[in-house]
Length: 401
Image (tube, rainbow, N blue to C red; front, top):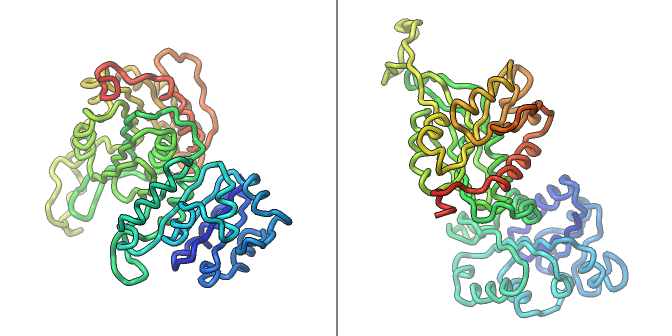
């Protein structure tokens, strides 16, 4: 993708260095265009080294040769302005063309991402909000942030520039087809912990990565997403995603049922512990006191419970992580749990649970000859999103009420 990264004159410009580097690493062609004030915070040579392209500042600069402002406005697929300072916001919204960045902006007709950064009082002022409305009224402009946090003044409040990771996420989502607009989807992911005592647990090696990749894809396709995740799963800043952390299998089931009336689809990607200690201790047991024989009891099968109660109103997609007889076991779970589809994936010592690649298949009730395929988690998530685009919400779901 061809990107113009506009850098406004604020202390947050230091984050734009990381952003520029990340964009280049992701394979994008990046030209940086700075304001004069921005060049007092970060030298143009820094951005030239990071992107491998000339940097423009003044209206007369020619990073693409004569009439660079015209050439660059036609060349770019997207403009990212980060940070968007109050001064730069005002100039862009008023249609001023006083430097190379504003000249390019006024001649550009494609999508724009802006990441405001300023003190809280400046961000919250009626004048700033009016300028923002003027800027976004008739153009394809996505506003990212600002976040709440520590500001240059030392005060804490809204006005901190979004992190580069968030901007990259918004850029990625910008060009995904919005095939799931209006949908509401819940994803469970990660492990559950079942405590023997406060310091000992029964768990598994799941990292929750598959669920987060799914949330990223489904949100980018336009859906509202809730992620119920186990301990130590890394939350990412993804648009339209609400995160809730739980500990045990019973916690996860309660959390899912709290949301079930507000969503049309559940994807059970969590690696839920099948068993739990029947009599967990409230205090740490000394090694000398341990009884090495533990009485266990069965945890609820979350997707089976949902299939029993909600199969007529909610789309249910499960996961079957198996070491052998993968497809046969997955088809059995599909039927037994009353699911609309199941993802069969082979796990073992070198595949699954944190690996970047799956050997997997999406199976529906009518599928008889599906085979396992090598794919990345991102490719699998895209296939799941395509499937949900075909599966219409059921009668009685919030989407169809």
